[in-house]
Image 1 (cartoon, one colour):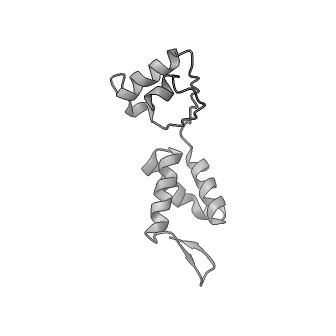
Image 2: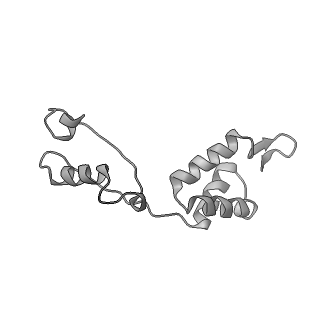
Image 3: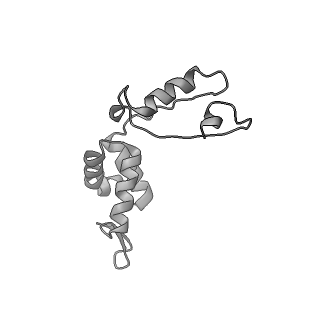
Amino acid sequence: LEAVFDGKGGCNFLFAGVYRDDNMSNEHPLSAKLSNLRQSQSVHVTDIDLSSFTKRDISEIIANELRLPSRVVSELGDIVHKKTSGHIFYAVELLNALVRDSTIYFSLKTRRFQW
């Protein structure tokens, strides 16, 4: 893998990594590696900054996925936003865990998702 990152692998390679800026100091090993990659002539690095989502954004995503009006999911959206600070990757993981644990479930009786 080092040969690929150093451009000596002689092949095209796409690497996508995800990290949180607030969790990575300058002393972190990934920070040094990213700095080296950015200085390399043979490797192109593109950063995509994903800012935190608002409570409304999270609620709209939940409403879309659960096929429910935003007003119905607003409290759940507030809780998910508070627990994840609006980080979409954590929000998705939390929602998946809530479904796995049957905290969010589809009710055949009401024919809609409930929690």
